[in-house]
Length: 268
Length: 290
Image (tube, rainbow over all chains, first blue to last red):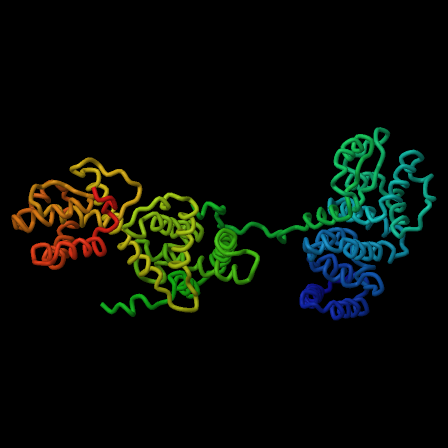
């Protein structure tokens, strides 16, 4: 690849356009870059974007609209940007409409993974995402929307192994994704399950989905059940968990000469 | 000295920042200062205003500017923007804020009136008073002039005086001739007036609390014997520690032209008693007629 001094300028332009709330124009700039300098240049631009900017850009192109960025962003950069996906959710929102948020997260991740036909890239994307805590939680959110089916698959995989299971009774959207993960990254699959069902000890207790309708008055019941079943986290809990993992501050190196903060002691 | 030009000027922090703008190579110091000021504002909003509304943050911003400005104004430094900036940079904004806030806390611990009440030791009331005085003095709009430092000075002088009066009242109570007065509430000014008036009898007794019968006796004795005012008071003052003497002398001069004149004059005893109760010593006079 030849030296392209324009790339930092393009990166800057894309960043500014995205932050200004105009992802269409940013996408246009990316397309222009692809035409003029080729796909590799775009890859370089995308890999240099700040993760929160990349996240903002990608999240405005999921579902119906595809972005060139979706196809070309390096897996590592995508995994990092995923941490910021939940940044715009507020707690009331999570409380009121967890389904909508889970849906948008699904649209994004599904678009990323299955937008490409390149199986190698798909595996790389999966591995990069599953190498992070927030990526694992993000998948856990998706699976928790179809907890019953996931339990079925989990038991199958536990009993038969990932490559021999696959047929389920359900046609839920997340199933192909779950199978894909179980086949490409077994360790990642285990960690996702652990994220949803922290109490599961295979062979000792059975998985049980968290249901939203449960009333509080069968608390006694719950305790006896807990020993038998490993209760899952609900979608809502997992969304909150994901929200909490959003880095609260862009990582900036500590300023030279800044003194340690007194914190609340300024009132002492 | 022209007071207006002395007080009507931007908050000290703004003066320091203007000096920072003049300095060469100020980027790093400015960045650190900005970080520190933002952090302080967030903490102030959390503790005193509201860190969830724009209005609360805005108020906290003004309080931060004012509290740092107060600390700078009370520091022993030259009155120039550059000196203020050096002071600020040398200590760091957080420590300077802490200095200002400690001054406010000390001020808030001083009595607001000369009336001692049970509520003074209530932590809720103390916290409320602290917040009130903090808001009153330290709210500084960086775009406008600020006179919180002058307000602080006046308030400090006032409250120190109040504290002195209360200390004097307590001393008088403790040395009350008929035994120390035990009561958690006290109107210190009234206690001092009682003592000064009873000193007129000339026997040098210290009386910090009274009842109507004693007042009647006092009036009768003054009318019968006409004791010399200054001689009586001097006898009384000899028993008083020197730190309270100026305060008592001052009170004597205030009373000499008013109620003392009436005591020695021809006013009816009943009218005098009403007058005393309403205007001078009402809260230090026992209600029972015994």
